[in-house]
View (spheres, rainbow over the protein chains, first blue to last red):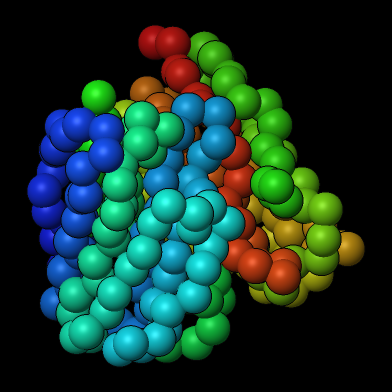
Length: 115
Length: 108
């Protein structure tokens, strides 16, 4: 498996609190992605990054922000968590190219519950 | 909204039966990728198709990309219990979208 580490793996928090999820890669891949997975919706792209400090919105970006200050780290922040953001969050990476034209390799996911 | 739809959403088969999942896009795709996610696991890349009408095989799995590059299919011959999981297609139109997935259950 690709060297991708997501932290934390599980988190329970309360509505209105800020939450940051971390994705760390050791593959030196250019692209990094954050997805959420919910029953009946498959995987939906939240944000992605195509380089250090270069990010773009995905399909469901409202309520989320991201940052990439180093090639290996991509952070996802929920500024004020809501119950609708309870989900399983996956980080993925891919090599150079354009987003979606290279195979993506996924981390093990973070299960986030917002009460 | 979701631009890549998959059918069926769920499929139960007896071990040894064949299985097919279909992926349909509202827009032309530059490529189609297929992933498998085991229960409790993460998606794992299986294959990518790029050319119109392309067919690729991996052992018992056959992948097709439609002539119009708007649809794709994954066919598994003689399913085994190790085939259990959810199969996702993903493709790039104006954005990159994953399909809604087909959950496959194989009954021994």
